[in-house]
Image 1 (cartoon, rainbow, N blue to C red):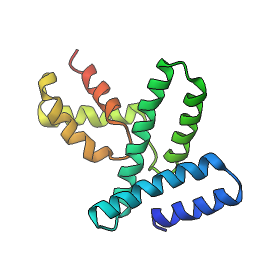
Image 2: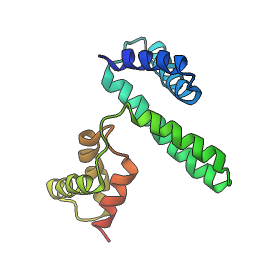
Image 3: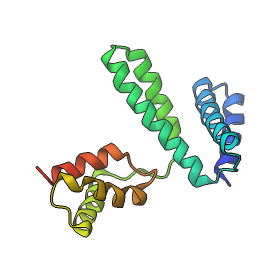
Image 4: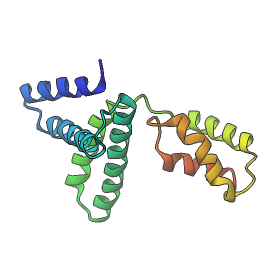
Length: 147
């Protein structure tokens, strides 16, 4: 079953079950997908849809940081629930240990010796972990090797 079909089925189910937050989250994803399809006049495949969902998760994580600074615990909780819903559609996330193995292999492969080589490392790692981990976590792990 394609991701679009799954999203539509889940949207219908959330409407039947009166799950407002789930319905709103799925609607947000579907509108982002539709917007990209209309803008670029293409039909998105599952990989492109996963990119959109991962981008939404990243934006929401950034929002949580801002809400915490503003002491808006109500919005932090709601946004975290939205992230939890979105993550259901992403492939299983890599653990920090798994990421560390991938990053270490990339460092060895590109022969990185300093922070100046971070672009090479990220360029090597990001395609491998697309949708499975956040780039900021990869960056944090890579930085540990140059301290």
